[in-house]
Length: 220
Image 1 (spheres, rainbow, N blue to C red):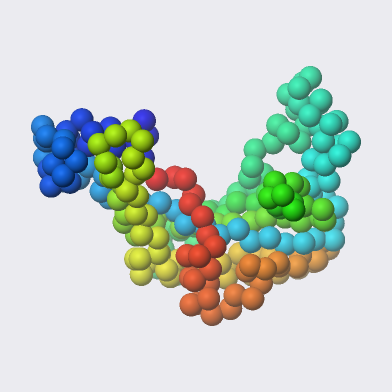
Image 2 (cartoon, one colour):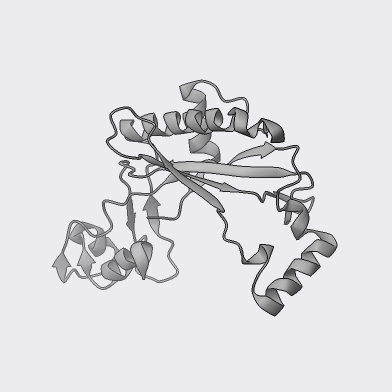
């Protein structure tokens, strides 16, 4: 059932915090204070760059090229559609006191954008996407049931970036990625950072963007 469903199964079975279960008419069979607590989740923010190089996958997944790549995958299991989401990954250390790598960075040569109907489509121009997240987040959340029935949504609180360490490593990571993309080795593709991140400069702006425009890493 995984990290998200297991606590809910336990609580509906009577195993969990008695004070949470009784209001839902669930008689506790074991008062376990830790069920649903101590949840850690990664927070990430997508950074997109337009590039001069045509070596991205956007054009390969549109029009006739999409038909070609779909056929190639169907017939032989290869080609662009057999690739994983992140084709390049790196581990790096961004805080001086960290003894080992404290972030992971993932790059993909495919960017999808919503069309007028809200459907996701490959970007019309060459572009890439890169993001990262702290390896060992410390902000602690929880997940519990919100009612006795299976249809009741989970009471989930990730509490992203509430820990000071998470804030520091996230800010340093964002600046590291931007510096990475400005290296001379990438000058030939002339990466140009897009909004929603190009105008972020202060620590406060970076954290606010991660909170408002970021997403879960789905690693809880």
